[in-house]
Image (cartoon, rainbow, N blue to C red; front, side, top):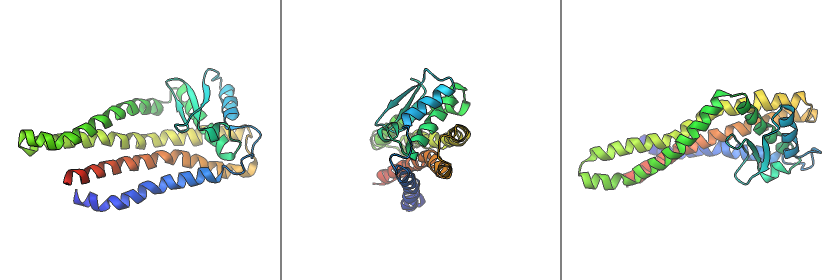
Length: 228
């Protein structure tokens, strides 16, 4: 436990670094804002129609770019939905990649959707269990119940980190086995832009690595709380 507490600042730096790099990369290629005639939403619609996914919708959202398999909707942030930048069209292609995974029954995507649901409940239960530890210890007047609750809480909160790690292969598949081939085969990008698009697609995938590391830091923060 003491080692984990000592390593917390290092973990914080490691967790923040991918997120900072992702934001820097996305922002960098938002300029020039008029790089392409079509916007992200129009590219997404064209790619979906080319793959026969006419029922998949394209919408704007303020909750971050993602594909929703439950409603079969590609959701893009306003700057990517309406934007004409390299970032906008590349991110749109990445999210369409997830829609194609869903249509093809891509197993890791199905597993991810299930684990996200389980993780959400697990995190809530874990948080409540960890908060209850001091009270359980006082009532029982023995550390054993607290230890059990502590282990259950850490395991349930650790599900979030597990989900994000499992998500990485799915994200790289959407980026480099789906989005990049679609962009190249359709000649959607200006030739000099393809290497830059690859950086954007890497950034889209590494978003989940950052979230996974932040989930681990969440557990470390509970260690500090319990030591007080």
